[in-house]
Length: 166
Image 1 (cartoon, one colour):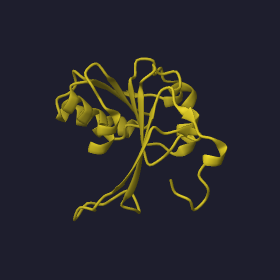
Image 2 (cartoon, one colour):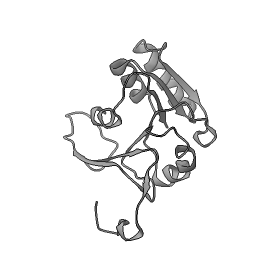
Image 3 (cartoon, helix red, strand yellow):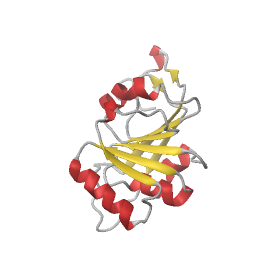
Image 4 (cartoon, one colour):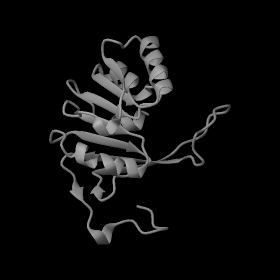
């Protein structure tokens, strides 16, 4: 979480969106740490309920809103920072919406890239599992991607090849 937020370079006046926000931890942490407005979006009613509880528990209702919506029908025109923790196919489907963000807007993705969009930064983290903490991942290695709008496209010869990590 800390590295994701650091990569986003959140500053005063930013409006942070987390698409597929889960329990809302990204938007809650961004609001608490940086004092920015944040919007969490999830289509799952239970995840929205979890997020709203997290927002109330952390007393950031004045900064954070949670919406139950389809991310592909979402107006992202106010966003300056977008967090993604979605499968690569979903990230790629979002590219037309993300390309319309204001120049300089940052997109940070946990684990998954966006097709031929060339990241401005890629960070590989190795985390140590906490005792008694179940991980949703089979691996303790996490890849974080950052793009800045407008992003470059990767040259076809620079595309990842099976078994070749970048």
